[in-house]
Length: 333
Image (cartoon, rainbow, N blue to C red; front, side, top):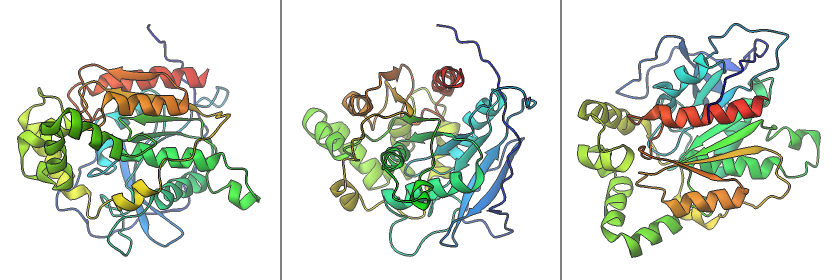
């Protein structure tokens, strides 16, 4: 069904808590921003700085029109804010949305916390919430990929807790909507691993070797099979492989502790619109993982043909972007 975009506009946002720092790059393969993008650093209450790549709407703002929500993007393991900046930030800014891609702590150009892992579901979701609370004047749409989707699920669960005080209410600001893209399901990745072990043992070995042993960093074919479509050109796979090598200076989570804390709480009377989006050729999140997430949120799963796990970088990245845009248009009505 064709969807006609109705462009609506927001008042200009003032982003005071950003700290723009002239500091050395943390990655040896820096991502060069595209026209219209800027890189700034949001200072968290801990004093650590979180990288944010911004691309504002190119549409002229109309103060008399209904406001479009800002879009906040959250990446998964071995990625950072750049993965959204390549295609989707230009696409959605051209469609009238202000876009903000975050690099979680220990990833990309963000500061690293002390310890051996970047954080927990609680700390990562809290960092996302702090950015929203201190910088955005309208409830945003959160878009999370892979483990970034699980972080958003934790955010949603805690947003619905009845606050004991006004301070607690502000910890997880209200959302306009959330898009879970090739997301780790609410129960975590252990179910995915066990299904692969019993039904696809060779695939299970490849996934474990690629991700746990980080073999995707040195094998171009394995990197393609893990994240991209078979038709992805070698030069693009190589470029993204190099960026992924540098994106994650420490693991996002302690996976044992993470899986012990799951599933995320099941909330009733959910008022936030949720899109559950998967990829037919996903090598990491299988169809049952997609369906589990959809059942959890009582949302119809949408599985896109001809794209792989890294939907926002794949050679047919427009397919997922157009599905999300159609959904966003529905939110704006």
